[in-house]
Length: 179
Image (cartoon, rainbow, N blue to C red):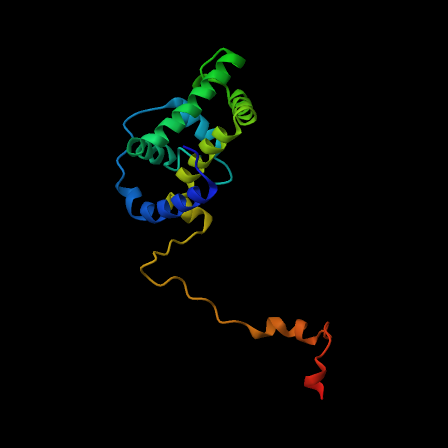
């Protein structure tokens, strides 16, 4: 199943609405997947005051999504299998055991060899990260449900047009208007 950009955007928008009410209620992931966790944290590492993908709750989000959506589970498994093949061929180690620089190199090779699958994995990692309310707070995003009014716009400051209004006209006046 190939996900189009439009499908991804629609799903992400819907996930944001759902996440606002569901994320706190999602049970902690009972399973571990070191390869997925390592890939997620390489795609979105911690830094500049921001948590990594797994620190933000992305792994929990993805495992919950995988448990409910068999097609997504199959896609992510396909991506992880490709990463395992690449790491075995290049470093004779499982992906989860690679050093940080080798993880990056594996992901770079994965992107070069299978760009569609890499994009799929990357997009799910982004979704798992940016649908977390904790991340929304850190980036200054405020969620406004569609069943309530959103933020009020500041009144328009007409003075910002002063410089434009003072400029000469860059068009020809209609002669009918000028007599």
